[in-house]
Amino acid sequence: MRSINLDQLRALAEVLARGSFTEAARHLNLTQPAVSLQIRELESRWGVQLIERFGKQARATEPGRQLLEHARRIFAECDAAEEGMRRFQDGWIGRVRIGTTLTALLYDLPPVLRELNATHRGVEVSVTNMPTRDAIDMLIANTIDMALVTLPVKRPELRITPLRVGKLVTIVPAAMKDVPRVIVPEWAARHRLVMEHDRGALYALVMRWMVKELPLAQAPMHVGIVEAAKQAVASGLGISFVPDISVTEHSPHIIVRPLKPVVPLALALAEHRNKPPSAALDIVRRALLNLRTQKKLRASRSE
Image 1 (cartoon, rainbow, N blue to C red):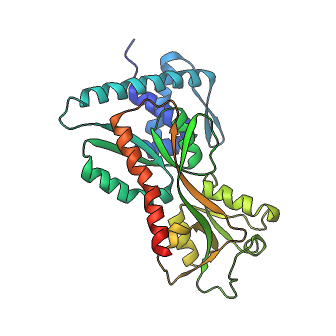
Image 2 (cartoon, rainbow, N blue to C red):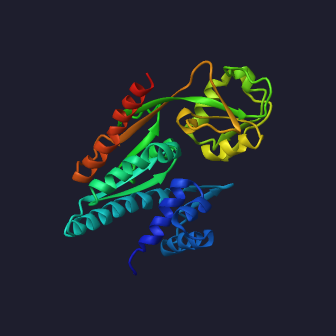
Image 3 (cartoon, rainbow, N blue to C red):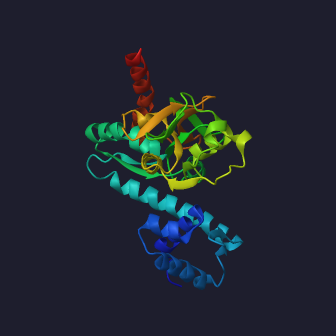
């Protein structure tokens, strides 16, 4: 029997991690038919069904779950072999895989990554944007090494270190009339909401804030990411809720208002408690923990 194809195993892992052939294909930079073919070839190899479709959702069968567990161990060994060999390369220290919310990727990580690239070129950093709930699952599965997540996160397997505390704010079109100074759930519920995807932490926070107004008269319009929500609001499509850090620069097309009651928005570093230490992990961890110092500096300058 021919050797197991690692690309086929990665396709299986991505489909099951994302619950979608289309999303897996996008992440793997392949076409959806190519991913489907890889799964069919795996299933033909043993004559068992590995994935079941429920509408647009893809879920593992029992053979699929067992194969996925084997695949994760294989990937871990492949990564260990690569890291072991690359240590022989001059100056290479190690690789660190980071999962991050899009807000942190846009507004917190850039200076950290620039500093790492300038001072520790031997550390290879791989960054993937993902919702907090996906990052938690991937940390526990050891497919990423650390993550920037939105609190609250309560998993005993993880070590959580708060980094930055912000808050949610409302943004409305600049042309909107009679906008109150403070936005309450009753007022927000009377308007069309423009939201990120419903798997995101921001969406869950907003729904908890508006719980007494549910169900909404109009279903929210989902645009995927915070920056797209800002553009949609600027175009007059509705109102939205975004992290305060994302609207620090003035825009003539939107108005920013605080919420009442306030909705805290805390960024934290999440790591698996049983993650073996390494030089590369220690370097990246220290760099990320500097976000706490930057937060204190910003606070002192504003006083």
